[in-house]
Image (cartoon, rainbow, N blue to C red):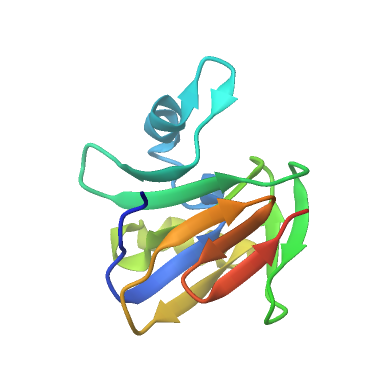
Amino acid sequence: MNETFEPGDYYVGDLCYVLRDEWDEVCSLTINGHKCLDGTFTLANGTKFATYGTAYGDGVYVDQKGHKYPVDAGLIGCVAVKDLDANILKNNIHLGNIIKFDKPFTTSEDQGVIVIGNLSIDTN
């Protein structure tokens, strides 16, 4: 079962662009042998994030509202803007989207469709 995320502003996109300093830790949490794990994870510093592998790896995917999501690490996820380094976010914001969620939300993936709150990103 996926955890609930609190309302707020979230970066949605490939997390490799915004969790650069934490990327080794992200990978240690989300990679088990040769398998990438999907779901919700928490870094040692308390940063909670969700991540899901895309159906066809890298590329550009689009949600139902027309927002584009470039992908270079084969995943799309979300992390609270307040938990990100402001300079890294500023330099990479064009590689994802800042989405305001007004209510608590969950995340999931089913047959290549990644759902983050009210967003649906079909990667299949």
